[in-house]
Structure formats: structure tokens, C-alpha cells
Image 1: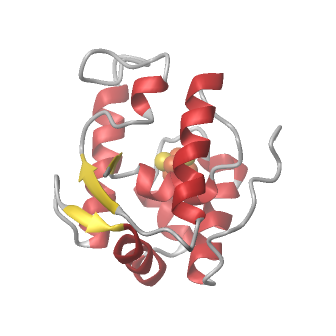
Image 2: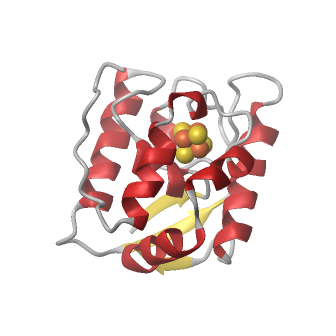
Length: 148
Ligand code: SF4
């Protein structure tokens, strides 16, 4: 079972190899590959807390994000917004396929302006592109633009 924090349910669709450290990029790449593999379905526990990807990030503390004094509040607020938008529960366990369907149905690319407000990656446009791909049924978009 994978554990993913709420806002990472969106990040996985826009991920193009950018990240906070080589270890983070490797872990996120591994998660993203599983998410985009249409042959694979598995359960995901959705949390408002550090997840598998966060623990490879150089900015994580013991139980919180410590990138800057406001980052824990910022990332947990994004998690909560995504959970509410998708209509799912904190610590709920869902099939990957179920989460993908919910994302495709309920998230529009421009919703990211609100859901991801304050995220430094939003400006690149790849996350909105990723959501548009999910809505179009194309979750296997390859990780292009590795060095964007
Ligand atoms: S804008 Fe930030 S929080 Fe939103 S999907 Fe992209 S990387 Fe994730």
C-alpha cells in the first residue's frame, strides 16, 4: 500500500523530473511510474502528513515539513483542499483507479490556481497540463522535459 499526502495526488500527474533533491526526484519518479502504469492498481492511504515522497526530501523534519516557517501550514492546507475537492477522507484508503477517476471527473486544470495556491511549481504549467492529460484519459504521459 502506498501512502500519499492529499496534494501529491495532483502532483503525480504533472511531475516531469523536477524536485527538491536527487533522492526526492527518484522516489517521486517511482511513485509516478506506478500511478501512470495502467496495468497496475493498488491501494493508497491518503494522509494530511509526511508521506513516502516527503521522507526523501531534504526539508522534512520528524513529522512536519520544515522548508520554511510557513511551509507545514501551507502544505497541509493544500492537502485539505484537495481532499475536500475530491470528496475523500483523511486517512481513507482508496484504489488508485478510484482516485484517478475522481481526479479526472472533479479537477479542472484551472482549479490548481486555488488548490495549489502558493506552490512554486504552479508557474511552470506542467501540473495543469498533467491534469488535462488525466481528464483526457492519458495518464501514461512520459516524463518529458526532465531538465525543465
Ligand atoms: S502546483 Fe505544486 S502542489 Fe499543485 S500539483 Fe503542481 S507541484 Fe503539486
